[in-house]
Image (cartoon, rainbow, N blue to C red; front, side, top):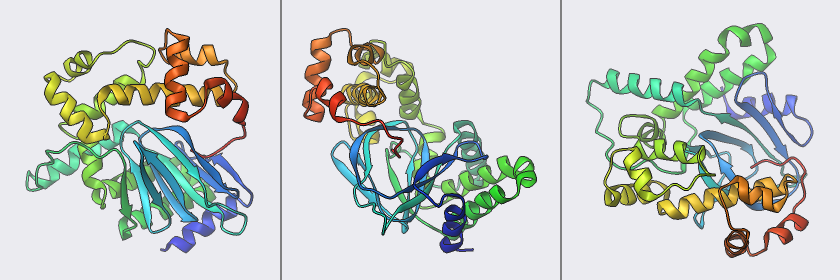
Length: 296
């Protein structure tokens, strides 16, 4: 089993540029043939594997560029900027996105910890917001076995969930496994806080609220949150809101509606913070942004 075989599997189903869902829930294939600058996006718990070209994700000013030598793990919902600045017809970006099912990841993490019998060193540090991992044999085999099901509809119905679980296990046991286990295992308070925030963006949530949600003191919560995400809790909430708003505006939503939708009650405050982060006013952003389907 090899990356070349996986690349052939993807190319056979995606000869032209696009981002397509597959019959496997949570699995998408993509091909990008033109350069796209990094723009605001929200990454959910995801694995992104590249077979050709280079992709970029920027978190709090730090650039993560990865290609076919590393896959990207995002174990928590994160506000990033993402793009494909080097993609072209000659060197297209080709790959697969796999959305991680939190329930499956938690179950597997618990099973791994139980099987270890406590022999694995405790993961006391906070989870990493983004992690890169080498393609080991386990991940490569699991990904190929998963994508091969796209050619076999009957097998897909019966084996699909099991093959996705196998891939999740390979991620947990790989180079980025520590980051994944910290996000989905015991002591995943920061990841749980982020899940809570992602579904309450339009509410006024304070640091004390967040700390209380996971039973921590304000000081400890603030420190652990910044260790995990590189941002303070307030900075993180602001980035989540503004990235969500930017995506809504790019999709055609009215600026005022987008601001209200992500929790801003003052239009002037929203415009001021938006321009500070992206260098353009919301209306300038709206006029400059096109709506074609893109890979984030």
